[in-house]
Image 1 (cartoon, rainbow, N blue to C red):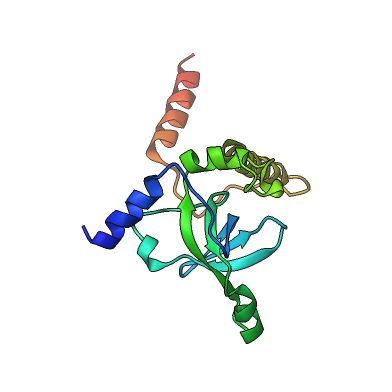
Image 2 (cartoon, rainbow, N blue to C red):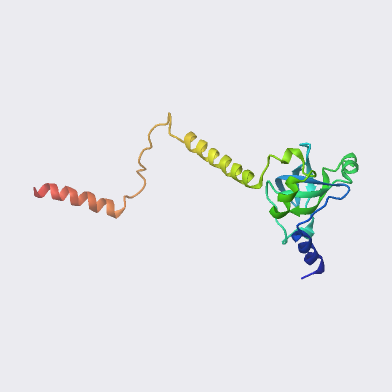
Length: 171
């Protein structure tokens, strides 16, 4: 294992965490692909952040995860016309988020957000969408489906129909 990844995993495992100058906690809104993620800061402002390649195959994030982002060059990047405004410097795990939620460093907008609640709400939204799709797929106002005459009837159906008609003849 390379030294960089070993140190990366060791730093991720530390319980105690302090924000440095130019760093802020942000929540992941969506994964855009090509190591780009959409994040929301404490003021509710959305921006694109770069998820560095050094985190690949060692740390994973998903919607609702919290990350520490370096925003020191954000204004300069936006002035130059770049859409990517910040760089992810650390991924926060559940064990690290719990103590931070109680600290004054935690943004107010995220205080109502809990990791479990975000997962439940995502599942709830998808189940509601599925129910709406099922309701909309009802056959309201459509004519009944006709039998396809181009298909040959299966052997079992023919034999059942013939045996029933034969039993009628016997009685």
